[in-house]
View 1 (cartoon, one colour):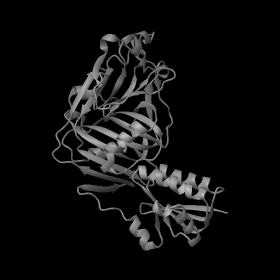
View 2 (view 1 turned 60 degrees about the vertical axis):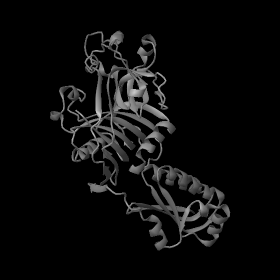
View 3 (view 1 turned 180 degrees about the vertical axis):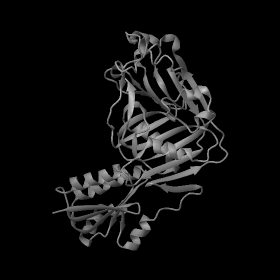
View 4 (view 1 turned 135 degrees about the vertical axis):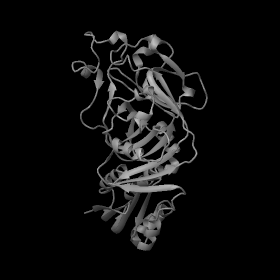
Length: 407
C-alpha cells in the first residue's frame, strides 16, 4: 500500500511517500501535488526514502510537477532516493532534470532562498507576508475619466454617448465598453471591460455571454474601444509587491488596507493585480443600459423590483483556484481627490476594480518577473469572464503593481 503524507514548515512543503510509485498509485499522488501547487506551494520537497520501487508512470508525475513549478519560479526537490530507485532516475535522465538531495545538509542548501534583491522589504502581519519594492523618484501617472455613469442607473445611453479611444492610447483601464465599427452592430455588445497593457477584454451583457478580446501587438492597426463610461490610466510602477497568507485567505479589502500604510505621495493609485482565487465576489450587467432597454416603470436598474433582471450578483463566493488579472483604482484618501474622481467610487468603497477570471493554474510570486507574468496570464490562459470585483473577494497569494496617479 502506498501512502502520501504532507506537512508544511518554514515555507517548505514536504511530501513523504512510502511504498510503490507506479500506475496504480501515481494518479492519486499527482492529484495531491497539483492541489499543493494550486494552493500556492512553490517549493516542494518529496521525501522518497521509504519508496522501494518507481515505474515510468511514477517518474512522469514528478516531471509534470517540475514543469508546473518552473512556470511560476518554483522548484521540486526529491529527497533521499534509495539506490534501486536512483538507478531508474539515472537511466531515464531524470537526475539531470530534477534536483536530488541525499542528506539534510544538501536539502538545506537546495532550499535556501537566494539573497533578496536590494531594496526589497518583507513584512508580516496576521499571517500575511508582504514582499515589496519601492521605486524612488517615479513621477505620478495620469488618469483619464471617460464619459459619465449618470445614465447607467436609468439605462439611458444611446449613440451620442459613445466615446471612441484608440487602443494604442489605453495602457490600463476599466469601464462599460466594447469594440466595433458601426453603432448598430456593437450597441448590443457593451459590457464590463478590462484593459491591461493595451490588451482589451470585454464581456457583453447578453444572455449567453463570452469574453471577447483584442490583443495589442505593438502596432496601431486602428482599433478603437467604444465607451459609455470608464477610466484609463498610465504611468510607471511606484511599488511592486507580492503577498501570501498562512490563513485560509486574504481579502481584497485587506490588500487595500495594506496599501493605505505605504509611503506614497498621491491619495490615488492605479493598480494591476494578479492573484490566485479562494472565492470571488463580483457582479456584471445582464442587460445593456441603452434606451431601448429602459425600465418600463421609469425606475432605476438597482431598484428592488428590477435588480435581478439587470445584475448578475452571486451571493456565494465563486471561481476558487482560478487566476485573476485585475486593474482599477484605489483611493487612499477621498477627501484629497477631486469631485470627478470621487464619483468613480460608489457606496463608500475605496476601490473600483474590474477583473478577468482566467483558467485554473499556478502563479509566480517573484516580483522581479511581474511584467512577464502579467503577459503570460493574458496571452496564454483562457479567460472565463470579466466582472466588477468587490472587496470581500478572497485570495491565497498574488502580486500587485501600483502606479501613483494625479487625482
